[in-house]
Each structure stands twice: as structure tokens, then as C-alpha cells.
Length: 329
Figure: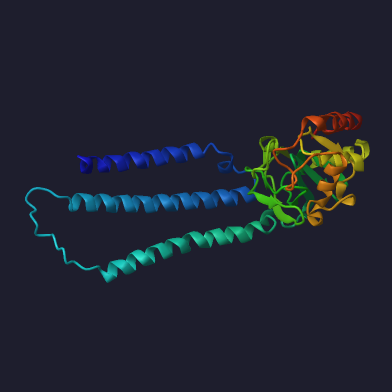
């Protein structure tokens, strides 16, 4: 009975796999809005189609063998050979095939990795905008050294313009990811990882930390805002003229674990500390200065968040109200 339903079970499995792929089409990574994300989408789809092809071949061969060599009346024992030895030819074939499969998957993967290390080819004539993306539990800090601007929990970029993100962290290891714009890159204290991104069209795209970092990791998000060129330039000029400068005291409070609203400043923290070199020492010293209780790893279950709320939320929000410029438009 089981042998009779095996082909049906395989058909159901195949249809289920197709339905899963159909559901994947609704995911952000399958709706790319930038060259980096398109390269990754194409690589993922190539891998999926390749694996589906392998699955079809295996299922067809499996069905053929089950049907052709099944035990049935009239066969007798004429095909039974208990002293049969292995086939060297077959063993070579099923050893070589996996090697070919690995090579066919490796070549486009390596090509994509090298391609993503360079600026997008279609805008290679444009000078990339450099933005430092710094993670701090649980907020994103974006510094524009060329424009002398710093934003919290959002980043504005012009469409069709390459942007070089220099990614690091002030404390725990995070992962910078904007699914519709490009792949994820880790940010770690004491080092800088680079990532070229570009948005093809205006819009607000969700970015996040995709690496688990504790209590408020689910809220460790930011808006990746692509603006038209003239709108972006207007925002830069308005921010430089009207936003408050980032004080060292305000930045110190940003080092305390917790979440804050979007903020905008007309100066950066790069003159205060370079987290790409600091290795997390600065954040630890600031938390000690403000009486933040932490374990030997810098954060843990023994954190007393309630005692820090007046520093973390009220005082920082007062700074936002004074600046009057903590929105991305």
C-alpha cells in the first residue's frame, strides 16, 4: 500500500514546495529597489531554480526505480543476486555530480561577492556619499562627515546615487540590513566594514539590526529614506542651518541602552569618539559614569532599566524638542 502512494506523496511535496516559493515572492528580498539587492535576489533565485531542478531529477529517478523494480507477481527471483558487487562506473558518476553541483553554485556566488564590494556600475561616474552607520543598543546613529550631519534612527540618501556605508558598533555586535536595498553586514566595535548601497527610486525602506542583541533588539530599526536629488540637497542645507549641534553630553546619553525617537544634528560624534577604533571602551565608561549597572559582557539580565529612564528618555527627548529637527523630512 505504501509503495502505491509514494508517487502521490512526492507530487504533494513538490506542490508544497512551489506554494512556499510563491509565498516567498511577497518577501522584501524578492522586491529589490537597488542594484545590491537585485544581485542578491538573482543569486537566490538561481540557487532555488537549480535546487528545484536537482529535486525533480532525483524524484523522477526515485519514481522510476520504485516502479520498475518493485516486487510484483510473476517476477520470481530471477533478478535477485545476493553476490552482486558495486559498480565502479556508477560510483564515479555519483561522486562527480555533487562536485559539478558545488562548482556551478560557487562560481556565481563568488562573482556576486566581488561585485558587491564595488560601487554600482551604472553610477560609477558619481562620487559616493560616505555615511558612518554606528549601532548602539538599541539605536542606529548615522554620521555624514562630508555634510557634518548626524541622524538617529533614520538615514536620508539621494536616489540613483552610490552611498558608501562604514559600519561599526559602539557596544554589542549588530547586523546592518535594508532588505530591499542590499544585503546585511556586521558591525563590531573596534573595526569597520564597508557596504555600497544605492536606491533606484524614492521611498522609505525598513532597515534593522538582524543580529540578536538583547531585550529591545526587535525595536532596533531605522528608516532608509531615498529622496529625489533636489529634495536631498534641500534637506542637507536646512539641517546644516537650523538643527542643533550634537553635544558630548547628548551623545553620552545615546550610549545608554534603550530606544529613542528620530533625531537630527548639525554636527557628528566623529570628533568625540571613533567607534571603529574604540572597541567598546567608550560606551562602557559612559555607562559607568551614569551609574548604569552592567555585567562583565557590558549588558545582561541584571540591568536595572527603570532607574535609567529619566536619563535615557526624558532628558534626551528634551534635547529633541529644543532642536525641533528630528524628523527625516
